[in-house]
Length: 474
Image (tube, rainbow, N blue to C red; front, side):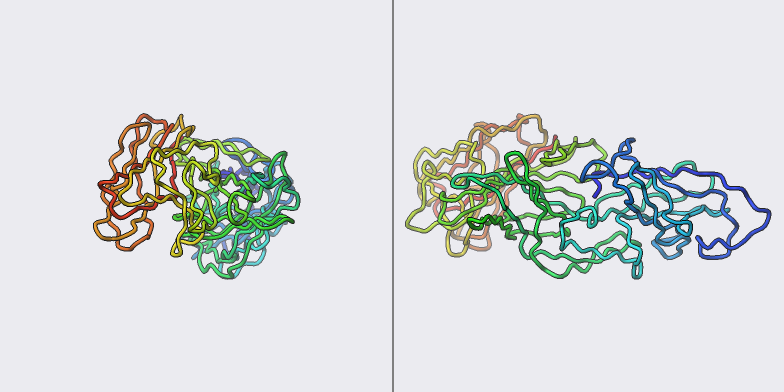
């Protein structure tokens, strides 16, 4: 598993030329004897450190390399050659028959991938993330950027990128949970297999839905659960189950959740037992970062905790307030002042009129949200939000109307740091169906408080609020 774009620099050693031509079995045909043999040294931002697991290559790590001309892999000169390292970042042929030589004439391109597989069918790499115990063995990397090279080229750079996504949960104990010993975690009902076309660099045919057990690592005051998963365009509503000897805790991924190739999704999770009708796992914070290098900057990864300093220019989810998970019975809907199941308990939640409450309904099971009752004044305010040092701040939230008759999302007003933010008009085609509103251009570039306002005169049907999210660029 590699953390960032891996630059492969080609070092050449000069071979003695014969006066005659002979068959070069490495190239697969009758060609002149090559003048330079290709060896590889790996670097990351100029340093020979590349492994995400422990920030270095391991002995016997292997990459697969194709040398070719033309589009894709239509004309392969050297097919799936194995190059390995002893751990110092320098890659050499794993055997004499794996050596690649530049041709005497013409230019070539390179395609490469990690980790190496000796047997491929139709240049298709079989992806399988069922087992997470050895994550380097399933962390697929791909490069196809080195083109137009020949025997006079001094350096060939292969820029690798992650083709899968990574999800990390830093799990801590909350109310009613005192011991995380024996914790397991699983992403429920996700595809585990797919085909990766090395010629085009595309992933296809996702299949074999199963529960994927995350790799578990105990930390000083928490547990890290991590999994490499197939990219998915919509993971909304997927369940993540955290299991202790005392019972199970379930997290429902919020609306608009997706896992993109090359992205790392980190969640701070708190397990609670006793603050809701059933034990729950609450997402205190969710962050999305690029798993690979981005042109505008770089990031650092804490080896143990998986903490992330977002790179310059990368849009990052700073906080998401889902208002908790589980089911609230209609006879026990808590008011804002009494509720304790917040996703971000360090924030302060107030409502002046004591009219809003937390609830779920039959058509939205296991989806706790804030109810803005019709013909009542409501001013849900969230304070003590520590956001500074970011630009291009955005506020996203989900809103649903209790009726489609005259309903418009802008009935619920918004203030950030006491300043009114214009909410665009958004009508609803279905009753109690959430729609995501995005407000950008927030100034100044800091957020301390957000306020959602419902007026007794304009709110005539009732609205529901959920998944308040703050996004910014470092």
